[in-house]
Amino acid sequence: MALIRETRVDGLFAGRVALLENDSRSSAIAKSAVSGRLALTPTGLVGDEQADRRVHGDEGKALHLLPAEHLVRLQSAFPEARHLYPGGLGENISTAGQTECDVCIGDIFRIGTAWIQVSQPRRPCWKIDHRTGCDGMAAYIFLHGIAGWYFRVLEAGTIAVDDVMTHSERPVGAPTLMAFWNLTRNERYPAEALEQLATAPGLEPDWRTRLQERAAYLRRNPIAVAE
Image (cartoon, rainbow, N blue to C red; front, side):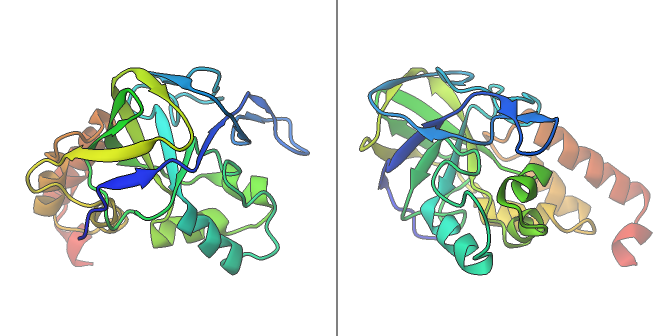
């Protein structure tokens, strides 16, 4: 694991809740590029909205980063897709040079005048397929662990395009986001590994509870691992 200590912010994106294309349901997955210095609060960028704050926008999911490398990969795998450009899949930040293989749960970064901490990976949902017009894209993202990740805001501040996102701190033994993906995608992974993962400093509490509950189930039903 080779941490890239500094990454430039190539794009910042925000959006309003609106009806999805040809659908009666609402979403803010369509983000537009914004300029100037933006206020970043514990619940996200000022001016950005979320339709369902259970999955994006609370304090553990205040800011979503999607590496530009993933968009290139998706463009190659789904050449017919719509809206595969920075901000098109709901991300707030676009960077290049670091992915889930480099970044760990609990990593702390300084960006502009704000301090942020990696809290969890994004879990892709049906809105990605709908947005891009490609059935199976969300499943592809899930399979390869290329959904990007969320930050919580430790200290509010302002951020802007071309700011440098500087790595400041990493908890001892922190799992990479890719390791987290590999463990949590496997429903039969040993309970001990899930319990250990649940102790990762900085991990969002709802994920901690989910992992502990899964581990408890596997201990009560060891055949679920052996099958």
